[in-house]
Length: 86
Image (cartoon, helix red, strand yellow):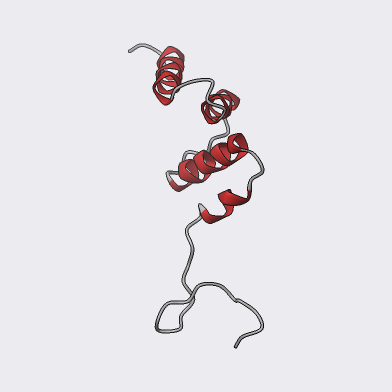
């Protein structure tokens, strides 16, 4: 029996690479975990969540003060309002 667990391994003995979302489970509050999840997802899409308004909306959704639909509508309207009309 091994004295240490080194992490998950595939049947062929190679180490299994975990997704970037694994570390999110360690955040102390749902709001922080939601922000981290959104940040990882947006980084994967090359669009980091650096806008404080976006982070605030993610936090509000995580704290369940807004439904996801309301949050999306708010953010979409903010994006559309900030775009110059052609």
